[in-house]
Length: 524
Picture 1 (cartoon, helix red, strand yellow):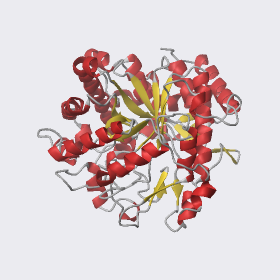
Picture 2 (spheres, one colour):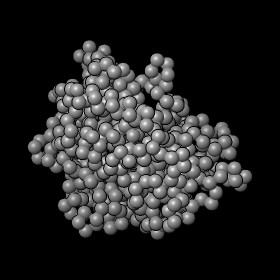
Picture 3 (cartoon, helix red, strand yellow):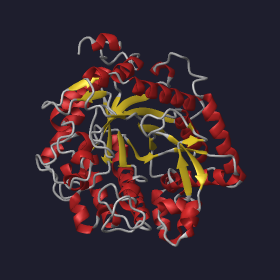
Picture 4 (cartoon, rainbow, N blue to C red):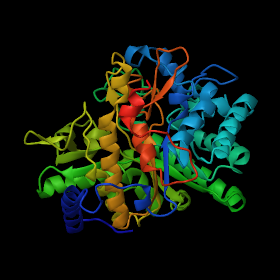
């Protein structure tokens, strides 16, 4: 592992900021396709259980923490995932949609509370049947299942029993749940991810409190939480998630990998950050932000311990690994799943450390911004900057800092707002999403040509679904879902046609017949 300290950090970050910003598109021809990527590179799209399945109270499923949260009216328009896109009943249709685009793989998650309604103990036979059916349907259409074990939605039963991820008891329960999945599905699943975004879930749920189980403490929460401790709980939760991941990965490697031939990883939310100025304080702040974001997970996975900056800034509030735990966590992955959407400027901000109160935001002590001197970092659709070169930046940084591990881009996509009142033809003409995907795929190809060990790319998302920040007010899908229609009819957007055309060099798949939006538009 390359240790980034002092001048090394300065030169690396400034070099990456300059190179990635200026190189986008220079090496990639105007027209490009999957043929420009390495042989065997996997292209797919993804969803997650609570966001797409629906059938929240059917066939033995019990609540996750998201069910309780949304039923309390905590989301915009009091939206819930009770029905969502109803993939539980429409999985065959959705698999066909994935096949029609030409996807190599579909990334989805298993609902822990559907398979093991109480978090442990008896397996729900109807939940087991559903996931077997989904996996078999994918394989019958030539689509690889890439499976996440937990995507933000642990069972409410474990939250009620011992406060869920705050308790080390969840480590054994997660390991037991993982074993059920490996045993029942591992003969057909070759790509496992243990936990989605273990570095973001604790912030939304235990520092700022806007996600379930809504724990935080004044003055840090974005809401008035009634319970929680923003100073300690985010670090405890991530620590337990890392240990649970490592326990599940060790189980898989020791008991199942040799016979099943699969791989296992973890999915990490990774921003790319650029120093606001070339000052030493802003460069140091940028390194600190990287350590507190991606390094929070990657450094333990590679070296067995947290980044030195985190240990220095957080102190005794940061849990420590025993020697045995460190060895189990270290190298507990075959690949890294990378979730990346955007890039931000970073400047040093010590103002939050002037009081005795500390949370994650005070510990990292930086200010994030999406513009500099009134100039946006890039196009600003809504509130999210579109910065394709940032993907190349984070991939190059991981290559140089963390020994260039195998990577799958597990999420990358574009959210559209205010579409409920649009005519269907306008909602389907998602040219901005096409531009986003084109730009980020070009950036990805540049990173691969520069040596990044990236093996696959998944668009978020296959179809419109319940989004964990905005419910149904934001849409990321390649397919439009008419949530006002009783049958939740799906329609391919322009981006679905574009992605299909991009993938057309794969002769084994039937693709959408037309990649011309004008031709498609006339049939709507």
